[in-house]
Length: 392
Image 1 (tube, rainbow, N blue to C red):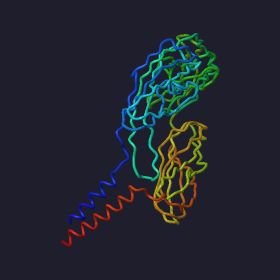
Image 2 (tube, helix red, strand yellow; image 1 turned 45 degrees about the vertical axis):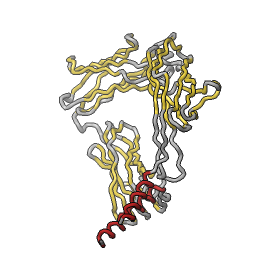
Image 3 (cartoon, rainbow, N blue to C red; image 1 turned 135 degrees about the vertical axis):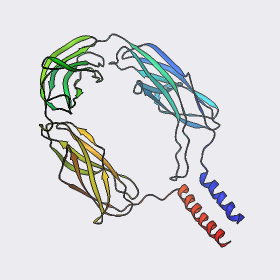
Image 4 (spheres, rainbow, N blue to C red; image 1 turned 45 degrees about the horizontal axis):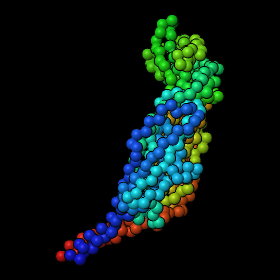
């Protein structure tokens, strides 16, 4: 009895062994403030990284926030070569140079982010053989961008399509950025019915880069209280308090069901290689060919060797007019065989014709690692112990 208990304890201990040594990380300074950074120019700061662990370790260098795409790292002793990782001996420190390339289209304002240092994950030769604890530290960054800027743009068009009550109204503004910085055009919309104001709202969340033309959609979610009627929207587009264009656009709110709902399920795709025990990503391609946007959801039945075994379904997505989306669902085959998925898309109370996709599963997962083997041994030992106790 004692031998079996000791065996269980030993196996449990072995199965929990992880290749984790004492580790730690420190970063200085904890905060960096850069004033008067010139648009299109460079700014830099030195970061000291401390390996407070007892063993050599590799550290990953990255950035996040507004500055995530601006930062490149260099070893301070080799300022010509960009690095993404750095090795530091145990209980030692190194200095790296963080260079921030300010975009030429950045507006004059404060930007925020952080310089992030984390330990690199260790590679293991056997799946499931161990885990590596990842630790990290960050240096917060505030950078004030200055320089001569030109904020300007022009409105190429403003359109509104008719809608139904309880469906969104889309005010579409085609805007060209003719300045040299990224801008957020302000779109003020006032809705009138018979010269009475019934609603007003502002859209200012769409960014447009210099020289580019974007279609900005300012959405109003109508309700059942918005009766079928002729309406007028006063749309004003401005930049920095200066009006670029203002226009009155007529439109109709129609009774529900007035606009045609139509859509097609064009194909079903198995996106990754079928392997036993590995989830498959199933994509259903749906196109909205109707006159109004519609919510769409895919559902399907799964068959193996001719027998029904499961159902799958995607999340519901809102699909705009003349737009195509991929509706994603997942299925995990548990055994080999010939599989068939029969599926359809439900939208606006309608259903598409059923489509099918077939695939074959023959592969199995790789050989389990040490962790899996330890689990099998543990289960076997517990079974023997239980039988031993019963016999006693």
